[in-house]
Image (cartoon, rainbow, N blue to C red; front, side, top):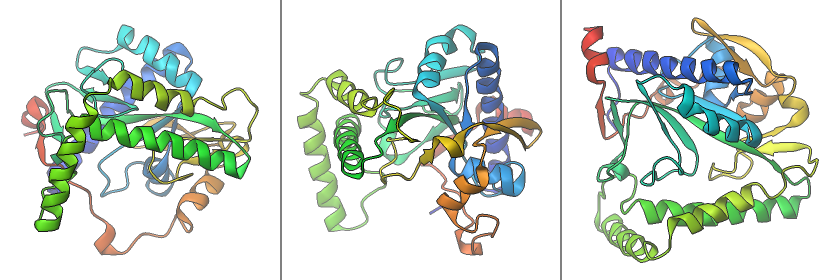
Length: 284
């Protein structure tokens, strides 16, 4: 795995912060609630900004706020930005959304042949109510993941990295065969199923929300009492929103979250291709 240079990572973080500011600007204008999740929330608390080796920002929104953001974003977005969602970009391999910077490139190996925008981005994830009942919770998750895997395989003919041996090569060939078979199914039908099962329990007064886009069950699961009320916190030079009981949220996700990981784990994940465009030239 090739890591970033220090200058490269610093610039990526600056550009992602620029995108985050645009998300916050629109959210404030339309009174849309958002909150940082995962490593971005951890970075806010432990580092008051990015985790030094991190190369992404993850934003969460309840489904109602997420829908509202997608509805109004195009109206307010600056010309530098591009909102990629399944509805706005028919080539998008994702069932969630990304706000990207135009004229930049941040391309993963599996996406290298896709004719779609692949710029520096911030992920925006919808959070839906999930059932308190354990068996219903598991059924909902499995249903969403089944259709999500179908969608990804339909949209991406290759795996996430180049095959390194015969077995991986055979798996890659099988993946391509599955991909071309799945292209017989309208992608809108698969997306409709993902959406249907994700929203299934919204408005049923469950105690928790989760982002069902993640492949591990309950990896982004949060009790409403942990999430609300949202609080403001410093992130680099701006103020962002976090789950109100961030200690409970981060402890659930990371355990001793203020403890730094071993040195060998403090690495980013450089994509297949990266181009900062004119932003990189301006920095020089």
